[in-house]
Image 1 (cartoon, rainbow over the protein chains, first blue to last red):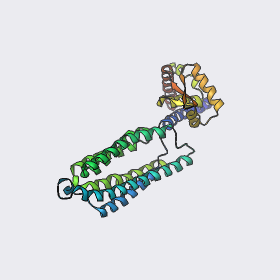
Image 2: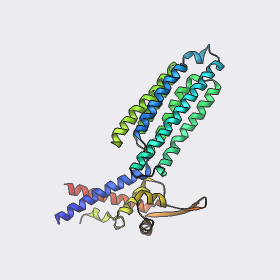
Image 3: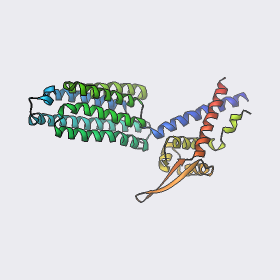
Image 4: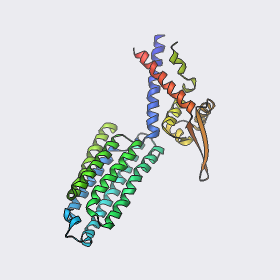
Length: 212
Length: 100
């Protein structure tokens, strides 16, 4: 009798465990790889270094001296650096997440992944277009803050469909973006912290938390 | 017999059915194919469990077309939501009783 009770108890706990894991698996994208965050951070640090060599933002750009034409030649180079960093980071993210999903016997491209990507993309695409318009209107000093703010909003929005750590990361990016709006001369510094340092920290934490 | 034991529904005494109800609780709707992938069961097996849950009116079927492909998806009903959450509470109670 007692033995029956014990095995039944085990089954109930097992039931609860299965229910929890099914709720999570069906609504959240759990293959997101922490390592890809670390790699994205490393790419961002390299890109920041290259950008620094090309040119450094200062208050002057907004308020005086340099003409739009002078600035824009360098900014286009900077855009190319930023764009290739983004492509490299996203590519690595896909590759590592795909590998992780396959190792865990999951499908990478399921409904949860789709939902995460769509919700992540809406603020991000809005921000991308906004930044382009700002560039053509000449508000160059605000480009770096705007990318941080919109990226943060994208992370917060997408975090509902993946690990909740991403939400924290998003909030920090927004905070950095706002600070960087105020301290306009230090765009590159904030950018390096936001896209480089924070990615490495959060990617590392997530790697040790979920993948080891 | 404790009263909460009455809330343990016979309809949920199966892994696949528990899985279906869990997935439908946290999603607006889930397609047949996604359920099959999630639970790792065969078409026939899943279909028979879905039928049973449908008969209890715990879930609802919605048939539509994506392009030319038919797409069947499932949603939880109000009755199903209540029954499932009662079932969960009863499970928790049982575990608590046993660890005493």
